[in-house]
Picture 1 (cartoon, rainbow, N blue to C red):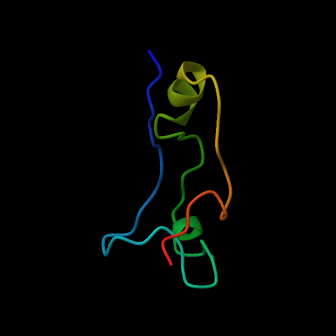
Picture 2: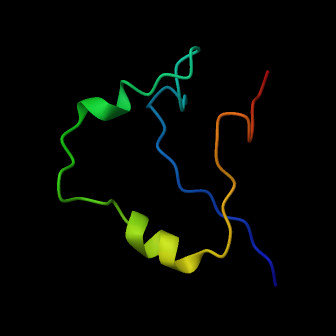
Length: 58
């Protein structure tokens, strides 16, 4: 069976990026040595859809 999953960061007000697609708010946190489950997630998937054009609600 094929399933779909999403692994992403989102601000508390529900946004993923700024209007100019900037992620500066996300990069302010010190996360050295932490992957927040990303490695385990990547090991579990067979394909990826990435990019700012993958989904846009406009």
